[in-house]
Figure: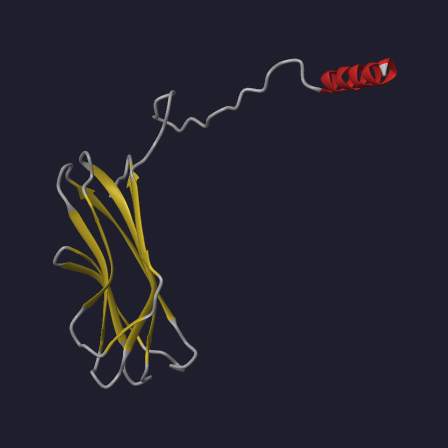
Amino acid sequence: MLRKIANLILVVALISLMLPLTPVIPVQPVLAGSPDDAYSIERYYTENLTTQTTTSTTYQDAVTLTFTPPTTKDYLLISSALTNNSDATYSTITQFAEGANGYNETYQSPVDPALNWRSFATHKVFTLTGGTPYTFKIQYRSENALGTASIKEATIAALEVSNYYT
């Protein structure tokens, strides 16, 4: 029994010699201009991964992100989706919108409606006023009611950006 205890003590001693003599302190990255104690950014995200369809020629909402920034800051908004139309003759028209303002209206027609999904992606930097609610959307519609517009995997992300220059 004493031999087993002695062997155990020997193993523990050998393992302790293999450990570093000074404690390892994790180093947090410090970004230029950030406080040394912490760095965080405001960020928001939403998604609708389901396939949605419409024959409407007026915009339909595919996904909506609503948030109220705590203070006035610049935000990078990134949106993306996959679109298709049942008829290769007609386009699915997609846009990114903030309130009543549409951005990057895109017309996309599939080569083969059964196989081809087209990617929609855009980004824009907005200066958002603190305490004010904002609504961002990806919207889509059919160019003609004879074609069925489809959209899926619609996502919107908002990331606070600092020191942004236009």
